[in-house]
Each structure stands twice: as C-alpha cells, then as structure tokens.
Image 1 (cartoon, one colour):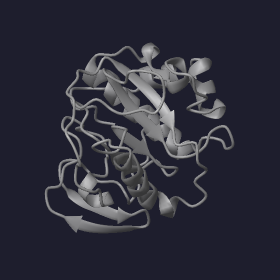
Image 2: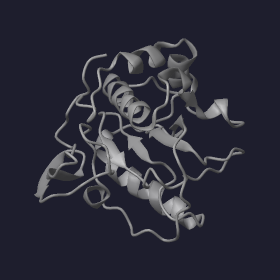
Image 3: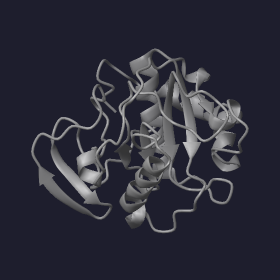
Image 4: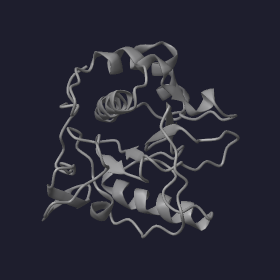
Length: 212
C-alpha cells in the first residue's frame, strides 16, 4: 500500500506542528497524541479542541480491531474538527466519559486522537467493546464512497494497530461483524468482505515505530 498522505492538518506525535481546523495550522510545543503511536501522524486532543474527560475509564487490553463509520455524510472536510468535537459532546451527554472511539479519520486522511487505547470504548449497539480498538471513519458509507486519502490513512492506522497489539490483519472486523448494525456501511465494508483491506494492511512495511 502507498504511504499515507501527510496533510497540513496532521500532527507528529513527537511534538511540533498541531492544528485546530482542517485548513489551518498552528505551532504548539511538544504535544503528543496517543502513547505508542510513533510514526503515525495524529491530531492530538488538545489540537482539535477536546473537552475534559467527564468520568472514569475502564481499563482493558486490546485483542481486536473494529472499524466503524459515523453514518452521517461529511460534505465539507473543513468541518471535520468541529464534527469530532460534536461527537465527543454528544457521547458525553450519554454519560460516557469521552469520545466513544480511540481514533477518528476524516475524508482528507487526518487522524484524530480519541480516548486512550488502554480504555474500553463505548457503543450504543449490542456488543461488548472490551478488548476492541475502535477506529471510526467520518462519513456515511452506505451513501458515499470512501475517499482515497481516508482509505490510505485507515490502512496505516490499522497497520499500526495490528503491529502494536499483535493482531493478525486478517482478523480486523467491521462493526456489523460483532453487532446488529449496517456499520461501517456497504461501501467501506466491501473492502473487508473481499479481503482487499486485509491485504493492504498486511502489505504495509512496519518496524518497531511503524514508520509509515
């Protein structure tokens, strides 16, 4: 798979450039995204304007990777950081401590930090997310195609997760595989169904830092 795009909106987790909007950048010193994500470009929570955590997390150990979509069409990617803030606010209104997901990827391929990977995610569907790394793609893939940049960053994110947590790429699943839902949408799920996504993830060369 080709290396993921490195758009102006991404932040190296080793510190340096961060962003608050999808079309502007600002410099903040030594910000970090998610522990252990060396080599990925991730927008940290401070940069996208996250609210404080509103409750306690439950610890877990990642054993699975599950792909989601937001099921809402994103017409203008400049609105993506605001969307992520809205998601977090809504999820906290449900009594959850933070954004339900560990990572969100927008249409341009920017990856946003969610809750810590060592904390169980949340779901409104009928499965237990304990042990699952929850990766969500912004958009509604029952109604739209997956943008190339978003797909490329999804592959990189999943390759990092598979390497970091010792998960075989072929074991990556969609939300509908574990719960009664159409998530992550037919146009994204088909990449899982036909094995293309598994092969693309497996083809990403990784080292200890997943330098992609």
